[in-house]
Length: 327
Image (cartoon, rainbow, N blue to C red; front, side, top):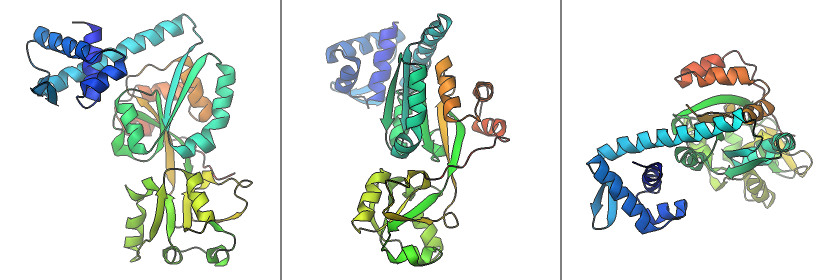
C-alpha cells in the first residue's frame, strides 16, 4: 500500500467518482489513477467502488471506511510536515481561507495586510463563496480556516470560535419613502420589493419565515451573494436592500439612507473554524489573534482539545465578543 494510492482514492471519492476529474486534480493520467485504484483493491481483497462497465457508480460500505481512514492518514502526513517546518523555524508556508464576500471585502483586508507584513513568505489563498461552497472546500480539506456565519449543520467537524457579532441594516436611496418614514417595521418593509443575500433564505434567520410569522408576504426582487451587488440594485430602484451592517461604508455609500433594523432581525455571530485534529502552525495562531484579540493562542489550544462544539462553546462562554457595525 502506497500513500500515492491513498491520495488517488480520496481524490476519486471527492470528485464524485469521476476518475477524469480526479486525474486532472492530481495532475496525472486517467489510466494511471484507475490502475492504482485496482491495485489497492487487489491488495485489500475487496472492492472500494461498484462499477458499471468502466464507470464507478458508488463507493462500497468498505470503501467508505477506507476513504475515511485514508483521509486521516493524509491529514496526519500534512501535520507532520507542518511540525517539521515549525521545528525548523521555517517562516514560509501557506494559509488558505474560505469565507464569504462580506468578510473578504469588509473585515479581512486590514488583518491580511498586517499578517502579510509580518509573514511575507507565507502564501495566502482566499476563496469566496456561500456557506455551502465553503463547506465543500472544508470537506475536501482544501482550506485551513473557514470564516462564516451560522450554518452550524454544514460544519459538524470544525472547531468553531466566535469572532464578532453583527446586525442587519436596511439600505434605500435617500429619496425613498422609508428614508423618512419613521421607525422601521416588518409591515412597512413588506410594502416594498426586497433585495438581499441568498443565505437569508435558509435556517433560523430565514426572512420568509420571519414575515410568515407576522402574517406578511415577502416580495423578493433579487438575491445575491455580494453586498456591493445588492447596493447597486438598490441604487437603480429595484428594491429595498437588507445587508450586513458591516457592509455599509459611510463614505462610499453616502448616497444611501441606512435604517436601523436591529429590533427586527436576530443578531448574528461570525466564527472562524478549522478541522478538529488539524495541526495549526505558529503563524496560524497569530492570524486568529490578529483577527480576534479575544482569542489568544492559549484559548485556541484549549478549544482544540475539546471533543464537541458544546465543550468549545463552554470554553468561549466568558468571552467578551465584540459587536461590529458599519464604517
